[in-house]
Image (tube, rainbow, N blue to C red):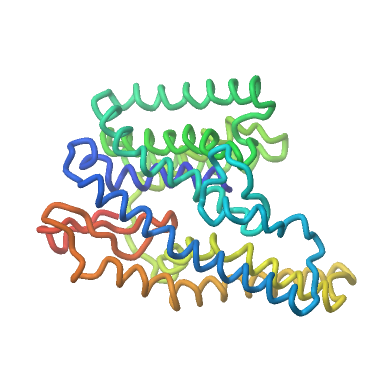
Amino acid sequence: MTDFFIIDSGYVLARIYGDRLAAGQVSLAAYARQRLQRVIPAHLVVSLILVAIVGGAALAGVAPSNPQWFDWSQLPAQVLLIQSYGVPGGQGWNAPTWTLSALIGCYLLLPGICRALWRWPPTAVVAGAVILVLVANLAATLWLGDPLYRLSMRFGILRALPLFLLGVAAAFYGSRVYVAPRIAGALGVIAAVALVGLQAFGAFSLLSLALMTVIIWAAGAVPVLKPSRLIEQLALMSFSMFLTNEVTRIVWFGALEALGQNGGPPGVRWMLWAVGLIGALAAAAVFRYGFDRPVQTWLNGPGRSRRRGEATVVPATPQGSGAVVTAGHPGRAVV
C-alpha cells in the first residue's frame, strides 16, 4: 500500500503541476511553500499529540509494552522529517511518516524532473521510468542487501524516488496519449484482477508495482460521470487517516493491553479490531475537520493569494496535493 501511495503521489502532482512546471509558469518558491505547508503543520500537530500521550502515560506510571518503539532519541529525526535521508533516528513513534519524509524530497525535485522529461516522447518517458525502477532494484539488492520495495526507512528517498517517477511517467503518458475510456477501464480492471491473483502465488513485487501503475493510469483516464459525495469526502480524509491511524492504533491497543482485554476468543478479537477501525476513522475525521481543513483554508485563503499566475491550493486530495486554481482564471480548477 505504501508503494501505491508513492506512485499515486507522483501521478497526481504531475497531472496538476507538470505542464506548468515544465514551462516555467509556476513560481518555484510558491510551489515549494505549498507542498511544505500541506504536510508540515498536520505532521507536527500529530507528533505533538503522540508525544503528549506517551509522556502522559509515563507520568501516570503506564509503560508501553514495546518501549523500543518510543525511544526519545529517535524522535528528533522523525519530527524534522529527515529520517529517509540516511541520518540516525526516526524509528518507531509515528513510523509511517517516513513516507512523508521521502516524498518531500520527491516534491522538491518535481520541477526539475518535469523540465527534463517533458521534452521527450511519452513512450520514451515510460520506458525510462521502468528501466530506472529495474536498475534501482538491482542496485539496492546488490549494495544494500534488500530489493527496492523493502528498503528500510533510512533509505526512504532511494525507495520512493524511482516509484514517484513511475507515477510521473504515467501522468505524462496519460496527458499526451489518448486512450478511449472503455479501453482504459478494461485495462485497469484486468490489472486489478491480475494484482489480486498474483498474491496467491507470491509477492511478484516488481510486476505488482507495474500493475499498480496501470491501475492508477486507468483510473485517471476514465471520466467520473456521477461523482459520489461520500467517496469524495473519504478521499479528502485519507491524508488525515494516513497521519493519525498509527496514533489511534497505539492508543486503542495500548489501552486494551493495560486493561487486560487484548486476548480472548477469535470473535472477541475481531470485534475489538472492528471497533479500533471505527475509532481510527472517527479520529481521522475529527483531525481533518477540526484542524487540517481549517488550517489549510486559512493558509490558502483569498487574502493570501499569490501573484498572478501562481497556484493556490484548495482542499487536499488523498495525496495532500489538492485541487489547484490558477490565479487570474477563477473557476478553472485542475484536479
